[in-house]
Length: 482
Image (tube, rainbow, N blue to C red; front, side, top):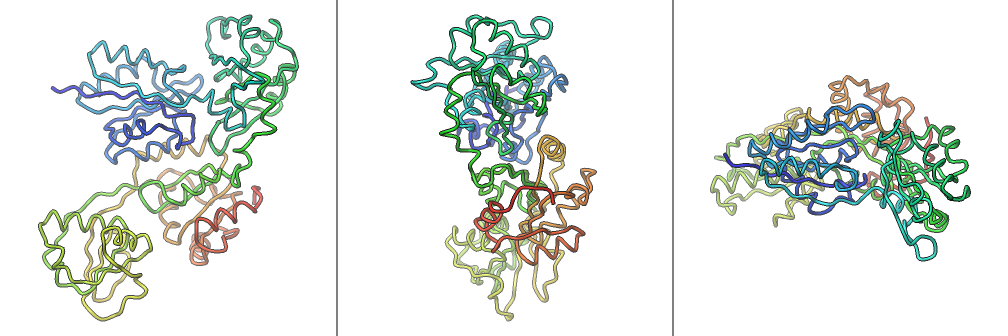
């Protein structure tokens, strides 16, 4: 039997845009993905629909899978001939135990690659406005594990070397041991006035910072109830933050948005919100299954209406596969949305919006099974695919909700409301309870009406139903409980 291959991939620090091109290519080709808690779950949306997703846990003090089990799974899936991706937060070579996993694969002569990732110890400080080195402040930099239980639950380190020989120190996952860290650095000569900053969920839109000195940071952390995942940065270079902080000045920084989704993949709206500093959770996640199509009458229609951009691609793929000469299709093309019209344009066809479609002439409507819920007089319907809830993503969604502090709900269309509510019920979540206290935004009057009909309060809407208008609206509205 042919052996598979394992790609050990660094997912980067959190912001999905920080993964490497090679890492993203591996995800898109994976048949199995074993992923950690600190790998942003949104990256899994780029995996093929049939890809098996396995959560490896890595919650503090509660490992769902032990390292030995993970090694065994990697070997097992590879020996089945699968293309396996091991997705690890940050860089796999920085406290990622990638050496152990690679050694297990080598033992069974399983081919593997290691794809570096951007390390949190460098990226999180930069998102907080702090380079870890600077000609005037820091000529050396060290990354240190701070949760190693080597001795009485405390890390055994060269404290003298760290205190006297390193300008900037990044401690990983060390909030619980922060008093011990400060005490040792002080005992070995670090000045009590040395700046310290904690960066929680670095590079995510939910990023938080807490700044102090070696003398007072432990008290501040207790008072603020600051927790992992956090990077602790120690060093004079932190003083640069006042001048070059940038991420926290983005228009949507602090917005943690739940976005109702109608399409399968990450949406353009979500991308725009993220690019402006927001943390976005899209729900629900859909998967599409192609259905057989009867194309015997396709050349007889005078009008063909496409209900989605996906239906355009599926229709023409079926036409080509059936050996039909596209030139024999004489119908005028129409799109139910601008996205559908654009998809037709990309294939070289001029189409207009369905609103401009005249009533006469034989009509074929092409789309997924959702079109069956609507009534079209004297029109034939060709169902290209079936869209259904991707149940593999339901536990991911619940975990993302638990880890975030969502303050905003966005419904992008009236069609997004009902599927959102139904999918929540499959997660055993009540929509009314979930939206309680959130700033609920509707993209247009029809959407607001649908939100109201579903039993929710809509608190506002942008000036127009565009992504740019939504960003502008959210940027001027204070983030507060409703």
